[in-house]
Length: 177
Ligand SMILES: O=P(O)(O)OC[C@H]1O[C@H](OP(=O)(O)OP(=O)(O)O)[C@H](O)[C@@H]1O
Ligand SMILES: Nc1ncnc2[nH]cnc12
Image (cartoon, rainbow, N blue to C red; front, side, top):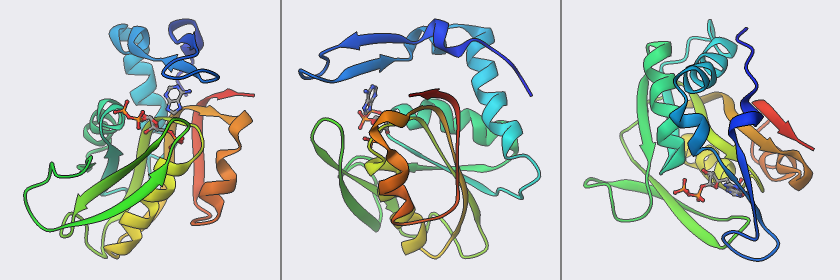
């Protein structure tokens, strides 16, 4: 298991993007070659041997972590995109975030019932984005095997929202209590 002090390269920004929210800025960690590699290895190694065929990641920060994890695991990558960005038939889910509401879409044929899926994102806060992706993955009939995050804001209790839609493992490299 790779060990790295991820938190030393994550910056907390108070009252961004709105009062009361402490934004976790991961751009310094992404820019650090050793740190970025440790994040990708840390998530990929945790789920190695589980037969993952596809990684699903949400626009935009989920792409930054999910796509390299997929490549590292020898899996395909399926983007969950913000509305109106995918050209063919889609399935769509709306959800609430720490700041506002949004929707995600995946192509209706992006996954098959044979797929074993790992969902990956940089951060889980309320769990709304993750729960929406669970619904999208299950809507197209694929098997969700687990979820991997760089960081979990545990004080927001995301497991309550996610636990209402799935009981798969929620793995995070960093926990903020
Ligand atoms: O657990 P939740 O409360 O749903 O929040 C987590 C989501 O919030 C961020 O994405 P955001 O929607 O801000 O979009 P971005 O990746 O484009 O910055 C983050 O990358 C997660 O996807
Ligand atoms: N506090 C936070 N920091 C960074 N990204 C987020 N997405 C949702 N909540 C967030």
